[in-house]
Image (cartoon, rainbow, N blue to C red):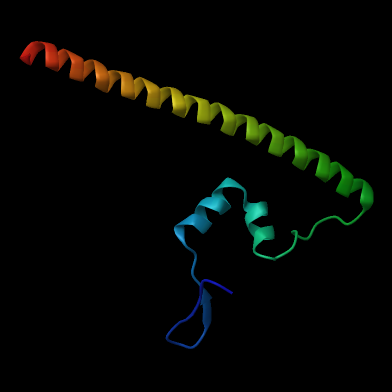
Amino acid sequence: MEGLSVDEKGKKVEILAAGEVGKFVFCPEAWRLSRGRGPRPGPSTSHLGDERAGRGEAEHERWGEAVDVLEAVRLGLRVLFALSVTACLVYRWRIIG
């Protein structure tokens, strides 16, 4: 497995890259599943599993909508920054030229 190392005492330790930490922060359960660790232990009765799955889908939907909004805000800020830089350059060009 990637990211394994041996410390000075001979114990295997896991080293995470910054990207791994970012993936974990975004969605700990998806990070856990991508590393082959399986789902967290929890209630095994089917009715509770269905309820948890529904809540999980709703939570992912809500999270996805929040990410979409933040992406739109970030794009807007980039456009605003580009326009500001352009305005400054035009103003400077008119004063100097």
